[in-house]
Image (cartoon, rainbow, N blue to C red):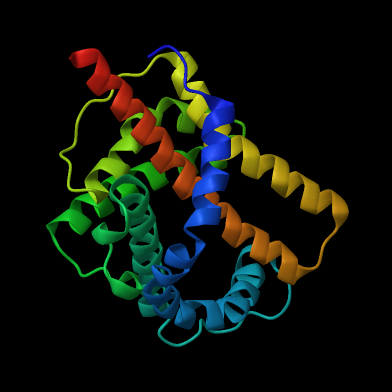
Length: 224
């Protein structure tokens, strides 16, 4: 596969989101409920972190049970991503009602890869923020295994051309970056800002799963 159809994949992401918005909302119920405790303490936690790291305001104690709430939030985020990946790749029947995801071996493999990729893409921030997209670009073939693991596939070495990797990068991160830049320039309120950030999470998951489908279908066609 030499190129991934960027325009068609972007349109397919919009079409999938529009035609499946009810199911997307349904599979978000369980993750949202699990994330609520951390979301409620987030403003207080941010104040504490700003005081400790940047000396802004008075240093306060961390909110009670923040470690537990953080674990619940991470679990909720992974459950949401798994649900969307399964919905895009396998359809409605592949996800449980209300988006419930129970701990199992599949989730464990997904978590380990997710943790590694998160650390690998966030660590360069301490060196130079400009390294982040470069590292992310290089890890795209490995990242696609997240979609596979969510759909009960084994971890495989995915080989992509540089043009395909660049196309996936543009589809998954380019569109959100443009949208984020626009809302910052427009100076929207905090509520709209966080709503857009939530939509970006869905965009990244849906578009990435669609990229996986396109690449998988192309590889299967070439192997015949």
